[in-house]
Length: 303
Image (tube, rainbow, N blue to C red; front, side, top):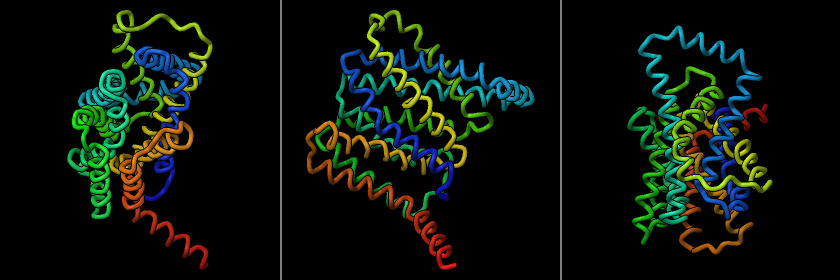
């Protein structure tokens, strides 16, 4: 897959998510579930407003397209869209549960093993081809995960469940390409809100009154939810799931460097070795595309 707009969209999404902790850290005094509730509800309201105010023509066109589908294709589209919304909110809930009741390490580690699971799922379910270099990259990722998970089997199990939910989300949306991705995202967030709404009265805390909470939530909703999710869904139109899965490693790599350089957290030798292998695996997975690009540049400058 060449380095094109889809490749850059996926890469941009994971780079943005890599800096998520900068907006999330100042909210550490608030309950994680409250952050989840408000993140989903505010994102849903923003998306609905954008669609009904600025994108009415897209809604009308999409509705006409849906009406012209066969009954089978309608069912498939509805199932894939709602399944995506369910998997998305399930992934967010599992992530928060792991942070609150298991360990922060298990939650973070989930997004380190997620690319491996996504790549393998794409190979099994979607029959996407993986060349020898890419399998070697997967092997490097597995080795790095083994190094990180040594002595933390319980955390690894929770991480696998979280990673599996997001991997399935990516796989399901790879096949859901018939409609505008912004509209698909809106429907998924509406469905996520419907799922979460019954739990809010029992599990939600007091409504926050501090301006900081809503200011940072707005940043989280726009910059770290709507924009990267849309870029991710858009990228799946032109990239296979395995490539998106490997690009996902950009996220934990940025987290790793932020932890060292910005939050001044201590880092073990095992972590340095593991993340170095992850960085190497990204290069190896895309080595064919990198060499092709360099050859094109060489031919261009030679002319």
